[in-house]
Each structure stands twice: as C-alpha cells, then as structure tokens.
Image 1 (cartoon, rainbow, N blue to C red):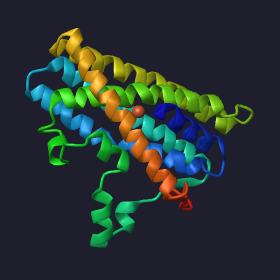
Image 2 (image 1 turned 90 degrees about the vertical axis):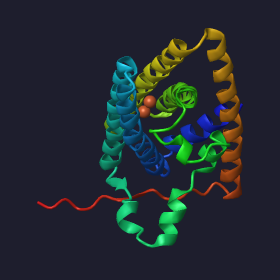
Image 3 (image 1 turned 45 degrees about the vertical axis):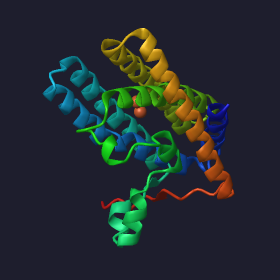
Length: 231
Ligand SMILES: [Fe+2]
Ligand SMILES: [Fe+2]
C-alpha cells in the first residue's frame, strides 16, 4: 500500500512539467550520493577477501554514477541544474540540519546510529537486505514513472528511455544483493531477513508520507536555472 502511494506521488510529480525538475534533481542527488558509499564498501569487501562482492559493488557504484548523469542531463535540457548546497550553505546551522537524515531513512534504519551505517563498520546483512529492498522497489517505481512520461516530445522521450534503462540496472542490483545474501546464509534466513526489511520499508514510507502531508505537499526546492555558458 505505502509503496503504491509513493509511486503514484512520484509519477504525478514527474509527469507535471512544473514539478519535474525538482523530482529529477532529487533523483540525481540520491543516485550520485550513493556512489562514495558503494565504492568504499567495494574496497572493504576486497580487503576482506571477497572478490566476488567487491566486483559487484564496483559495478554497482559505476551504474549509480551513470544514473546520476542521466538525471543531470535531463535537468540540463530543461535549463536547470541541482543547487550546489555545499557552496551555498556555509553557516553551521544549515550544515547541521543537512546532516539530519530524511524522515524516510531515519525510520528505515531506526535503531542504528549514523556511525553504525558507515562503510567500514556497517553490518553486511543490514546493508544487503536494506539495499535489496530499496533497489527492488526503485526498479518498479522507475518503470512506473517512465510509463507516465509522454513520448510525443524528443527530450521527454529520451528521459523515458533513460529511466527505463535505470530501472533495468536496479533490477540487476537487487538480484546480485539477493545472491550475496544466499552466499552468506540459508534461503530461509534470507527470506526472514528480507521480510524484516520489507516491514521497515513500509513503516518508513508511512513516516515519509506523514511528513509530506504535514508540509501540505510542499517540498524543498533542489534546482536552480543553469548558469549561463561562457562562450
Ligand atoms: Fe540507481
Ligand atoms: Fe541501484
């Protein structure tokens, strides 16, 4: 239920050309933002002697880099770009609030401190199961979003194709993470672990939807007009 509601929300937001840039910016930040985390985990897996996992994670990181570029490119075609928050927010109060997790992630990883979720120490089972759920749902949500984009206009059609190819990658990520869990535990244990994180996801989505409703549907703007190109 929660997943359907959120997919519907994003589908409506990406379909509307007024809200589209902000949605694209949010995805660019999320996709690109996961790259350092995945790269660090790949290094850790290599150091622990798990070459198989290290390679999967390195591929995962490079896919997410590409996903970020797809959204950045789509924004550029709308003459928009992600706001450079690093350059803008120098005051300590804003940088502090930036470190706060979104209501979604706070609820999803409830009971774990930010320190416990960092690449050098995160429990592999926690990483694999939580990321498996996120990737699996991302692939479905992206497919749904691509479907609502009209294809009567070249830039939108490009974006649609881009999002569909991203969705395919996310399916692949979910698949290797599932396999990674099967290499560590029995099929029964995998199922139990996945169930646990599925429930966390549902609760986290409800927390997020509650947050959106509290703000009357207003979301923070993540985009600005592109800087003029110097010729
Ligand atoms: Fe992605
Ligand atoms: Fe992914």
